[in-house]
Image 1: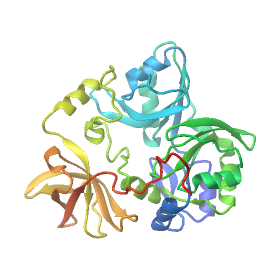
Image 2 (image 1 turned 60 degrees about the vertical axis):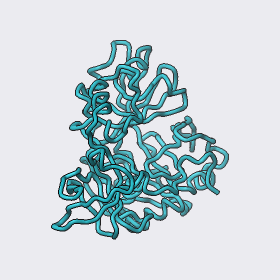
Image 3 (image 1 turned 180 degrees about the vertical axis):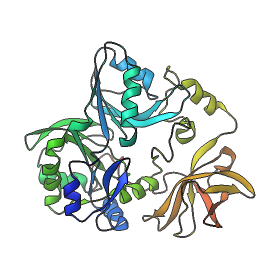
Length: 364
């Protein structure tokens, strides 16, 4: 599958790769360059492959309380919340954001590779008075990320960029086009996610890049940016084979309500021995690979889920599920990769602590 921006990417000589069944840009000028530009300036990411669902009606809130792990009642209109969609055994069907547009109207933003399964599961668990609409094919999504994001958008849409707190959104009209703009992202930097009609995607892509301040970035930089922040990626840190207890350690999960999969999550959180998601710092540039085993001395202690060179730290890092007793910051472990053992020190997450995402005002 291709997003509405496929020709834009090939016109910029992007290196295209398969991602969850979509032809997506891996890079334009280079992963490290695009990563560094996002950390210091502002980049534009095509994420039109992701899915958007709308749920509305008198029963929508109650249905979402039962389907999702986070508290839906606690989300005010104009805000979003991150959480999980679980199966009956607590396995992660998807991780997603839920936006409340009104008392009885919600949006879910879901991952591309799981969207079809998400839709089927949600439809099967809705009450009769909840209306479900899959908006994915008619909705484009562009991410404008970096400390210069607000300033760059103000240059293009003067006086039209609303002041918003982190994980808030507003419906705006730009270039005579109704859009939803949220102050969210997957990079750890100040930024926005712009939802707009798919038919307008190419026009807005060119408009955003036209001033020269915003530059395109691909999936490669998106991955290095999210790993530096310790953000989970479905299919790596999250899957149906596990509950979110090890990745979230109680965050984004309201155990006081009755959601599908709650008992399994509660049991795992209460268990004495479990594997939790930890950050590992490696001494050089050689990165571990997903599936590489982690050792505590001679004993197997876990496995790597994501590993790469972190440009902001100038060294390799990894995310791994390790035994709870091995997850204390500073603990010295080893990763077995490509026939050798690499030393790895447990580090608190995020690896990169200079992100601007949660700032109260746009970076100067």
